[in-house]
Amino acid sequence: MRRYSMATVVGCTVLLAAATALSGQAKDVTILYTNDFHSAIEPVPAYWLPGSPNLGGAAQLATLVRSVREREPGAFLFDSGDMFTGTMSFLTRGRALVEMMNAMAYDALAIGNHEFDYGAANCERQMNFASFPTLGANIYYKGTRHRFSRPWAIVERNGVRIGVIGVIGLDARSVALPAGIADLDFTDPIEAVREGVKELGDSVDLVVVLAHQGMTGPEQTDAEARPEVQRGVEEDVRLAEAVTGIAVLIGGHAHRGIETPIVTPKTGTLVLQTYGYGTRLGYLKLRVRDGRVVTYDGTLMHVWSDQLTPDPVVTARLEPFRALLAREAGDVVGHVEARLWRDYVRESPLGDFVADVMRAHAGADMAFENAGGLRADLPAGAVLRSHVLDALPFENSVVTLSLSGRQVRALLEQSLSLERGMMQVSGIAATYDLTRPVGSRLVMALVGGRPLDEERTYTVATNSFLAQGGDLYTTFLEGRDAKDNQILLSRVVIEHLRSGPTVRIPPEGRLVPVAPAAQPVAR
Figure 1 (tube, rainbow, N blue to C red):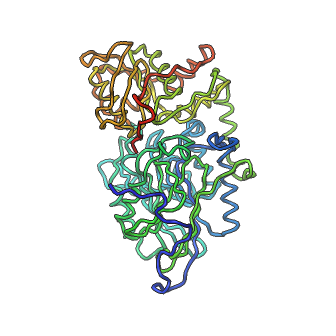
Figure 2 (cartoon, rainbow, N blue to C red):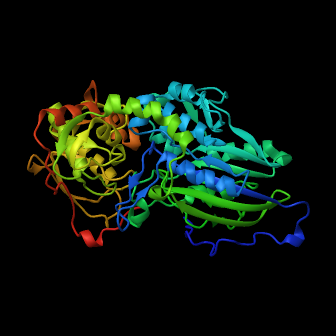
């Protein structure tokens, strides 16, 4: 597979086409963009930077957007999906995020997989409140050619007409709760974009694609400081090179910040993306003539929260939702002796804790929790209900089922591919070797202190997302005697925190690499 460096193009301003070969009047265009905001309403401490400065926050992001618009009137603002997720989203079914985007005057949103967190019907309902087009060119009602949403739109400002197409990738579709999208079909994004470019034709000055696709991101706010967990953008590049006529492709889902825009060799399309969570604002300045980009200047702007006065319009719009949050999720539910942090590609204290709670609640031999299901750390000290809902924001219940030791081994081997991060476990002690080929990385596994018996039947606890085959873990669908207790995992964890003493960090040693320093990370 061909790979593209983040430094494909050196420098911020590059001549893409000789001016002598063009005719017509040049137009300057400013595009601002975000992706994978995930309900990051409040600033987050950037503990990976010196002094742990605060980054992001909805009202602070809005102030930065406004400052650019004041300097460059007519700037467009787009998002490539996954606004939903998190406590504020959970309590309002995403409505708070839609209202935030309304207040910030977004110009378009591509529907991401997390817009389906509460089902397709809720997604449709919430998008009806949007004052901007919500786009999904390759999403259809099952068995029909009737689209779920608008496929594309034309946004015009100061004499500039931009055709915007939104698509969601098939990987992103596979991490949506299966039951929530059972009535929908998802088709090839490339064909949908090709149709959109043809349909828009010469009626626009340029075409922008908002593409929520690629490999699932690491779901960590410190991803920019962790190159070993960062995903590639090959799928974005592949789409851009497969369809002629795309000026700009703004990606999402992979959380792969592209500091300097990539220019695809074949089509000259600019490929962009931020790290997500609103910690950066993407900025792109174009000069366009006759439908072609002549020059560009692109970067990712830090949203330095402590240096930005919160935007009063966004602050006022979010005030009722903040009041709801304080009322419904502001109570202390327990205490933790030290921060329970998560990690997408190795064993983590939060993963151990959640898996332990699930196994104890179900009385099972073992438990599995997907790394992508852990969305925030639990802080040291007092833990609020909102902290738990941020960490476990999905409507996943606890499911108990029976699996053979052979099936358990298959799950562990799939986890060690790292395609969807490393599965967090309880009741299992395993060693692994990532230098081995995928499918043979498990070196040893113990259950209850004894070697995993492939012929034995084990009682397994997991969440309903995995039990439905989510994250491509279809082995769970082979389980017998499945019982869904219909109790949200977040509630189970909250009840555990309420009932017990201060939680101590679980001892490590469940998932141990044979030679830590030599272990590569699959991208």
